[in-house]
Image 1: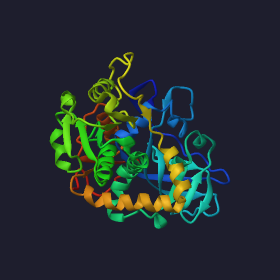
Image 2: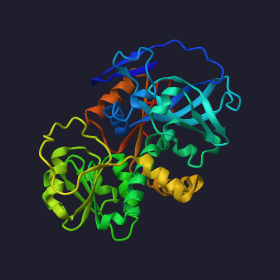
Image 3: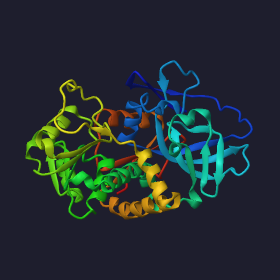
Image 4: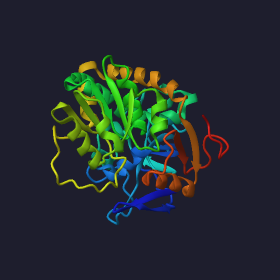
Amino acid sequence: MNLEVDKSDLHRMRAVERPPVPLEPGQARLRVDAFGLTSNNITYAVYGEAMRYWACFPTPEEGTGWGRVPVWGFGEVVESSTPGVAESTRVYGYFPMADEVVVQPGRIDDSGFSDLTATRGAVPAVYSRYSFVESDPVYDADHEAQQMLLWPLMVTSFVVDDFLGDNDLFGATTAVISSASAKTAIAAAFLLAERDGVEVVGLTSGANLGFVAGLGCYDTTVTYDDVDSLPAGDACFIDIAGRRDVTRRVHAHFGDHLRYSMVVGDTHWDNRADRSEPLTGPRPVFLFAPDQIAKRRRDWGRDGFERTVAAAWNRFVPWTDQWLTIRHAAGADEVEAVYHGLLDGRIDPGVGDVCTLAGTVGGPRPTDER
């Protein structure tokens, strides 16, 4: 079973049954057991062409306009013609919204392997790496759902915090984060709040104001309608919402005191505000996480980088138990409903959706787990 999206109209989705493709030498078949579905995956679809996310898992009828949105989750090797990748091995990594995927394992070591399928070369190598669960330093059987939902976001959030810290917040003392209820924003706020002398401000909708204020990782919460009440002083803007009208008002509010404007996501991907009027202050710069990851791997070494991120993760995950409810969706209809809810912004920020197209997941449904 595959769920595919019309690249020209993200609201159009189809469920397609495809017969298994026979393995060639050097390949492996992974059953996709479960995956997280968040606003991050909507960003993959929105930037699918620009960032080449659509290229990772092309449909057999490539060129027809249909694509597979990448997701993060757990899978199992159910068939292998590759030495060193044994059947029944459980892995964590990047998958299509499907019940299986065929990969070409390479660069195999004790920690996992990379998919060397030609199409995977379209994106940075981090998106092609599969970790063996038994040797994954961040794996915790009690927090599998958090790993599916939050680990990819945590890496981005870590880079947001690390990039700003690496640059001394460009002289700012305030960090303003839009779409403050988004899980990437929450993790970034959690890490920034650990820094001395930094005031973390969350920008959010009126509907989510109570949730955001109750998290405890934001010093101040402000609605989009009340941007003019933002604290004065030197600030950095971390834009996860992608709302041009909000960006313009934030830039106008701080003026020359806006030290840096970072574009991270596009949770309000369908915002059609006018983009022709120039912004006050610095030009917004898109954060390309792999660049900062590569820098830190040079600075700290690969193992040092992974230990540092894992330490941040291990501080963050127990805290999520206080506010995150896990919800399960199984089968094409339920998964499609979750996708459309995310696409249309009809989501509860305190809920994380774990999905499967390969059968039931995470125990009985529709029970939610706090």
